[in-house]
Image (cartoon, rainbow, N blue to C red; front, side, top):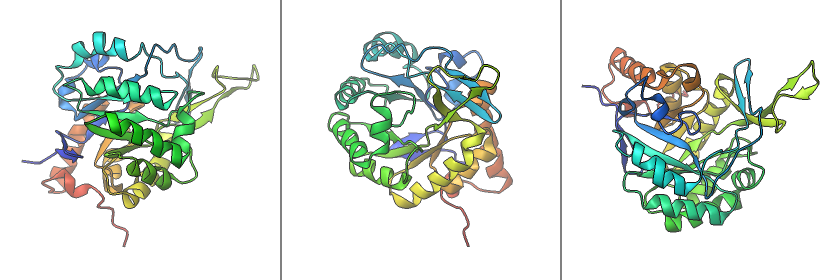
Length: 304
């Protein structure tokens, strides 16, 4: 038998394939297409302290090798999530991990405290890196001292596995990674979207209402792969790789670069079965290479 399970800070995942926040909803949207219990985990869409309407439309745009989004963390707040969403998804036979965001340290703390009380949520992903929110996100995710501060304050109130999601829109990704680990992060996930924009040449106007937005998809994979490799070498905590993973080969490349697990994002919009197909593809790769344990691939890049 081939072992696909991986361990992130004491939390066992049945396989290393999870879905990226904001691309898989709460999992309910995909139940008609797949058994969500076949993947390692679901990172649900961002939860904030109170209702957030998000940015005005248009807030999504297709690019030649990916997409731009400026959704702006639209959600109905943590109370709504606890009362209405959580009861509907807590039975899933996979890890449900909540992406936590906020405009202030106090908001992050408020949301983390409330999520900490939910028995079936074993971890949170602290979103300090979203480039679509004018307050909070960019500042926290791009300044090491602020990254450390928000992580440290959330660590005081959150008692389960704390994953921090990192922004690629920085000078040194390793410095940010080290700062959140110093603040108490159990693991890091990277990368979030790269800052980009689209222009309509005919109207001479920006395509997105916010002018700039987050670029995701195959275009960002080389950047994400490089940053995962750098962070894996720089910190001692597990790394979750995300950015342009479209198939099993992409996922395996991230494992070789040092990722313990991966997140599937933009691919979910193209094929709702993408995550399950990647699980199957990884298993097939292991059999073909006569590898008994997927953990043998983690950080196994041959440099010399």
